[in-house]
Amino acid sequence: MKRAQATYHLTAKARQRYAERLFDLKRVASVIEQRASEGYRDARVYQVLPFDLRDLPPAKRLESWLDENCFTYAWCPTPQLVDPYRPMRQDDYPELVVRW
Image (cartoon, rainbow, N blue to C red; front, side, top):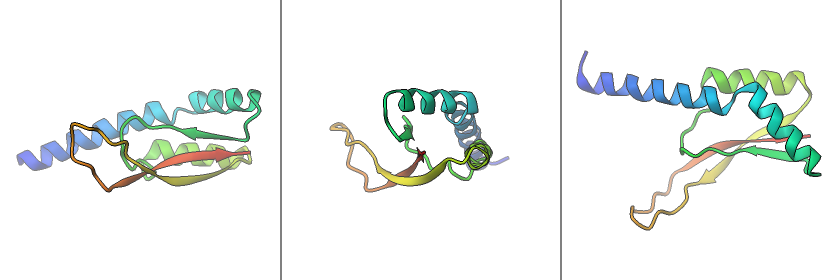
């Protein structure tokens, strides 16, 4: 296996692990209940890492669960936070917003 291909697989595995933690059904359900108990009608699944995770299996499982439970949701573009020690990037990444 070439180094670039091995590096790609490492990246894919890391994103998969991150998506599994981020889109855990129990965790998201808890966030939704917490936000609802505070009077809000939406919840954003905030990401620490600026990756497009919407096509990964954990995100698809969460979308199915949201559909089954009659929630609406959208993947909203999110600009990266500016880091004064790094050059500014113009890339946006999508974060999931759930509404009820």
